[in-house]
Image 1: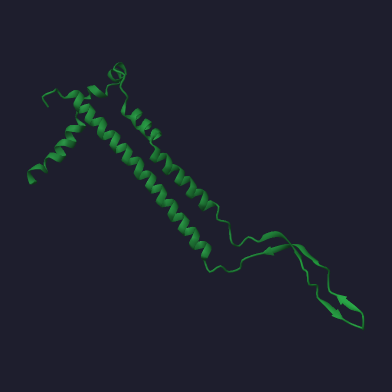
Image 2: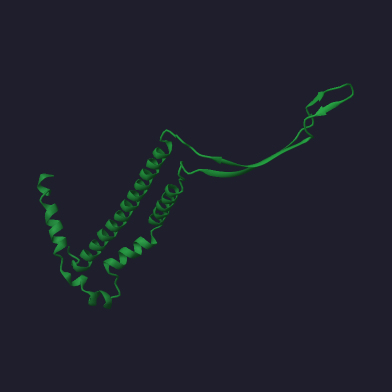
Length: 168
């Protein structure tokens, strides 16, 4: 295994100094071959995994931005209706009863609420959403770089096969 360690730099250098005949734009256009940049953009555009990661990143951004502020007062219009079969009453003078209401009870009104102390629960939730967004963005970058690496690797292999005679 020690004898093969010197081959790694040699292979990298030889890959860099490959004859540039296969990279010449005129030859590439004449033979209807795609350039490396065209292959990279085509693979990134057609990769379903990268598209799904982009959507996951967009969803994480939306989730992060949708977290409302806890300290802004909220005005809510609420209403309720209740039908009661038993109506409270008071017996007064003989033969006279006083009912407190009728069978229908309802209430409508605005409610103003504001949180004064939340013990940093919203701040911790915001930090959590920030970290989840960062993780999704890193996953997307990793996936894209993996796709680009594969495209470049196969492109170099095809270039070697094209320039190398059958005896190689």
